[in-house]
Image (cartoon, rainbow, N blue to C red; front, side, top):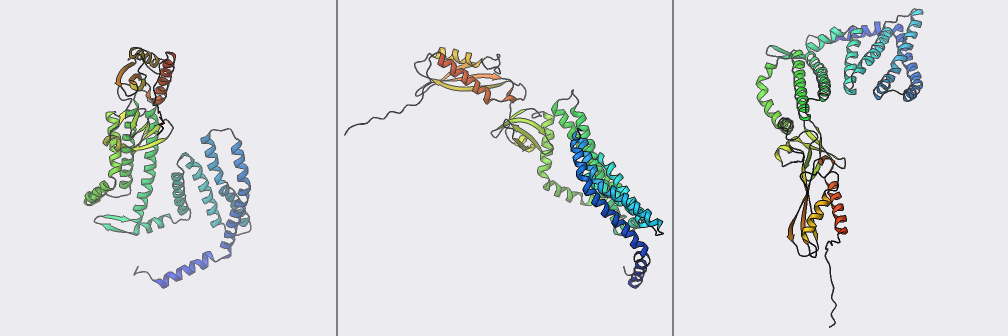
Length: 423
C-alpha cells in the first residue's frame, strides 16, 4: 500500500472513464442493453402466465412439470437476449461499436445454458449456488479479467510457515467442498435407493450399510475438498487436540445419537418395522436416521426419539425375536356363578376373534375372591401386534360379554343403599 501513488491512480481512473465510459459509443450500448432488458421484462410478464397455464394443462409426471416450471423462469433472460441481439445489430449497422452489448448477449446466453444444464441438480439451493458460481466465472472470462481477479485474490493472504493462505485458496476450498459435499450426498442417496431394492438384506442391514456409506462419502468429500484447495492437513496437527476436544463437547449428543443408531442396527435390538413401547408411547419404527428414530403411533403421530434414548432407557420391543405377544383381560362375575363354567366360557369366547392364534391356546385362571365378585384373568396370544393391541382386546371383551349374557352370568357392580330413620 505504501508503494501506491494515489495521484497517479486517480489520473489513470479519470483517463479510463473519459476514454471508455463517458463516450457516445458506450452510451448507445448502455441504451441498447437497457432497452433490451426492459422489452424482455415487459414481454416476459405477458408470456409467463400463459406458459404456466400451458404447463398446468399438460398431463405429465410431477418431476417433468417441476422442470418445466423451472425452465419458464428463464423466459426473461431469453427474451432480453433476443432483443439485445437485435438492437445491437441495428446499432452496428448505424456505425456504433457493439463490444459491450455483445458481451451482455453472451452473458445472457451463458446464463440460459447454465440454467438448462443445472436442471439435473434436484436441490434448489445447490442448483442456484452452482449456477451463479459458474456464471460468475464465465462473466469474468468474457470481460477478460479472470486472470487479474485470480491474481488479486491470491495476493490477499498471509503465510503460515511454508503454507500460504490466501483469498483464492479459501474461495477454491469453499467451492470445491460445496460441490464435493453435494456430490457425496447425491451418490449416498443413490446408493441408499439401490441398497433398499436388495431383497437379500434385512431392514437393519440396509439402514446400517446406508449410514456407513453416507459417512464415508461425506468424510472423503470433505478431505478431498480441503486438500484440493492446497491446504496441508498437517498444519492443523497443533490445533487438532483443542479443536477435537471442543467439537467433542459441542457435538456430544450428536455423536452419541449417531453411534447409538449404528449400535442398535448392529445388534439388531431395534430395526425398521419393529413394534416399540416406550414411556407409554406405542408404535412401530418407520425410519432410523443418523440422529433420531421415527416412531409412528396408531393415530399416525410421528415421535422423533433420539437414538441415545433406546440405549439408556428401558424399551419394550414387541416384535423382537418371537412375534407372539400375550395379552390378558381381567373380569369378575357374581358369586352365584360356577367358576368351572366361567373358565370354559371365557376360553371359548377368546377364540372367536380372527387375530387370536390357536396355539398357544387361550387360558383362564381364577385369581381372587373379591369383595363383591369372583375375579378371573383371561390370557390369549396374537402374532401381529403392528395391527394394534387394544382393538383385539376389545373384540375379546365383546365376545366374552355376549357369552356371559347367553349363559345368564351376572357381572356385579357396586350398589349404594340409603336408609332413612325417623328420630
